[in-house]
Image (cartoon, rainbow, N blue to C red; front, side, top):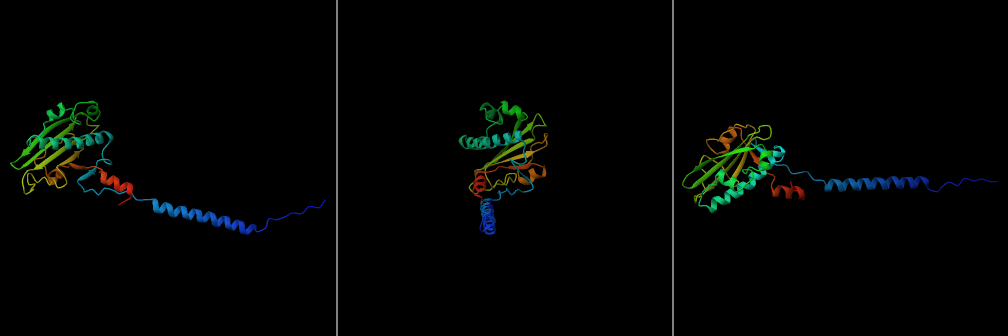
Length: 212
């Protein structure tokens, strides 16, 4: 019997081609990942501001979202009722969160709401202060609304500095926080209130599209 071992031809070349092919695939995948990966846009916050999503716990986030929605309703009611601000009782009777005493109100710390109004002939301003009955669940919230009925657009009542809309929402981790004498950013910041900044729809679109 005669036995002969037949070696495959071009073994070294086949191995080299295989290695090169794998390297090309890995390099191509890496380039695609680099081009498709985007940095998440981050909110630029001032020292007196906090994020409504990163800096609040789950219960506080619920209160903030409800208060943000209520603020738009209160603002609209003010226009439809000859410049009259809705009272806390009005909002409770309308079952409007977070003022309504519902299950969410209980779970979020049972915030007790009071109101302060600062109106002049042309400038109408009000604030709703919510202090929790259960301190280890939530801090305090302050909703400040301002309407300018003058033709000049001069926001000078208490220096409110409302240059980004008719209302602002503020937060304090102090459960015994009281109403400020003025509704200005400076006054509130000195009293250690933090303006809560929401993650807006425009921010979300930028995040989805990868626009920074």
